[in-house]
Amino acid sequence: MSFSAETKNELARIMPENRNCSLSELSAIIKLSGSIQIVGYKKLNIKVITELNSIARKVFKLLKQNFDINTTISVNKNQMLKRNNSYVLVVKSEMGAEKLLRDLGILPSEDAFYPLNEVPKELLKNDECIRSFLRGAFLGGGSISDPEKNYHMEFVTNNEDFANSLKDLINSLGFNSKIVSRKNNYVVYLKESEQISDLLSIIGAHNALLSLQNTKIVKEMRNNVNRIVNCETANLSKTVNAAVRQVENIRFIQETIGISSLPENLQEIARIREEYEDMTLKELGEMLNPPIGKSGVNHRLRKIEEIANKLRENTYK
Image (cartoon, rainbow, N blue to C red):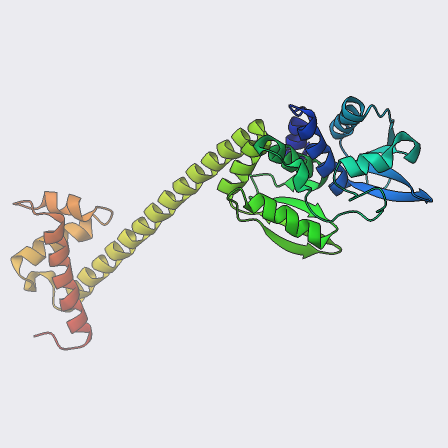
């Protein structure tokens, strides 16, 4: 099961605290995953389609508890491309579909049969109802990427005005959601892991939040380890290359004027470096008599390099 489906299953188990919050959540679910069908003069049916049985059961309960509407859940088996089955609920006109739509803030009045394309602010009477609406929006048209891959949370709607209204509601809570068009839909999305975590907390997806945060910690530790290893590898590579260059300089001097022609302090470090190619500068310094520090060893090896370069240029005297 995907991370997104697990998150939705968690949210589907949360029942709103009161009727108003129930209406808010149901309104969002129907707005994002439902469709309105004209079946006669001033007669409408509502069809809700979802790929998760847990969401279908929640819609069934909310309709029963708040409107005494007994509908049925039918299953559309999808034999194509091994896709998931879909679960369908239909609220018919004779069940009170028109009144339901008005109570949910989707239809504006008894005489109007065109839906409102904005968040029904009259239902969002307090913070809990706002939480419920956003929870319903995620259940109806939301998804979240597996945090192992990337950080992305989105809400998909086919109406641009409603997308803008939903974006404004989310951003009123301190977020920075944005909208992008995708085919015939409009997608309200968040990309930052911190903002996604905060929104998961607001809508009540605490298990998903913990999973995201744990994954983020592991990824950061993995990145830090890789960064340290890469840094150490780079430093080791620099050290090895420097040692190879130092030995080459010493051997070049030996083949031209001989090591014995160098000052005694340079002769000493040259012979030790040539014999112990793998030693660090600190270890080389400790072998000298008297011992010297890393910077002293580096200074002597630089002097040797200068002499070798002058010999190559025939400018050494």
